[in-house]
Length: 222
Ligand code: SAM
Image 1 (cartoon, rainbow, N blue to C red):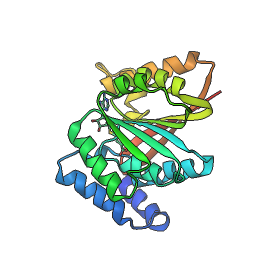
Image 2 (image 1 turned 90 degrees about the horizontal axis):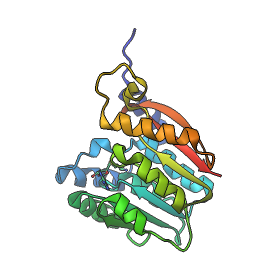
Image 3 (image 1 turned 45 degrees about the vertical axis):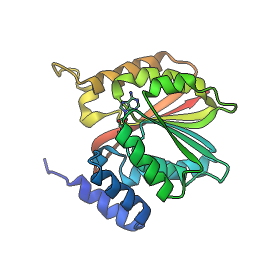
Image 4 (image 1 turned 90 degrees about the vertical axis):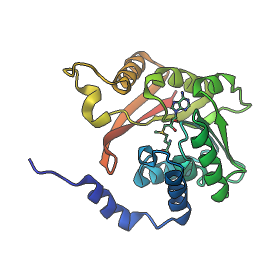
């Protein structure tokens, strides 16, 4: 079997489809300067996909679970209308600080708010006047089910829940593996919940690119 360089493949496509972006480049550099693991953010192609979804669905209110340095927040936040809002939840103080700086430098601090603390605790305290149009779950994978249950409460009917890292290089479906990672277990538990859930329709879109083999779950609340 031939070995494909998937980072090169992404770079090739991006060279046609994604413009150089000084704001995002500076956000990544700020993360590196603070020693945060910027490589676990969504790729630029995935970030742009989230941005296009926000625009094409006319999303006004977004909840993000797992901020890191605000890379995906910037991609989504800049697609919002001026009266839109993004709330993003982060446990790590340094990540939240870097994200706040990056969102401010991107001119998005008016529309995008970082809440510091364990995401689940923050979620259960949210009782927004209007439900969210889009919820992006991308934090500790072992808590996927808890986040998903709260996301269902918080998303509007017809709204979208996206969960990142559903494939984990194929480990999620590798049932032969002796000790599955917490990540795999978290994804498997979520899939089991979705199977019985009649209020949501969902599909996993597997992806390959600079972040290796992975995938987004795209779920619509009925
Ligand atoms: N969405 C970001 C992006 O694409 O730019 C990447 C998020 S990163 C994969 C996951 C983040 O979740 C990390 O910053 C981590 O500190 C945070 N996290 C882990 N456990 C958490 C928890 N219990 N509550 C809130 N955030 C958590």
